[in-house]
Length: 83
Image 1 (tube, rainbow, N blue to C red):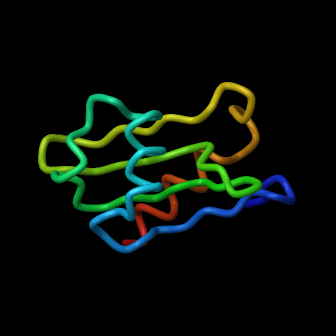
Image 2: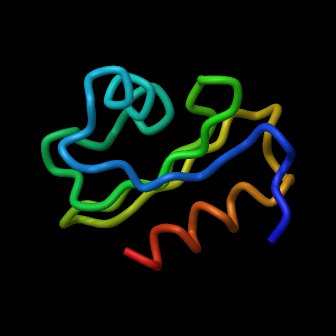
């Protein structure tokens, strides 16, 4: 799977650090941060541009609109599947 050159996908340790928690909440506002059990984040240029979060009631994925359709969705799903 090929991502844009400056994009990386990571599964950070939980609980998320404050800056990552804020970014994830911006992308996925309906997810209670304390309930997240698994997270995969896409980062470009130091900014979180995508998130796939899982918690006991489900999971949700969100990508900044300018980054959609570039393989990031698939990369986030694959990263979360590997946890």
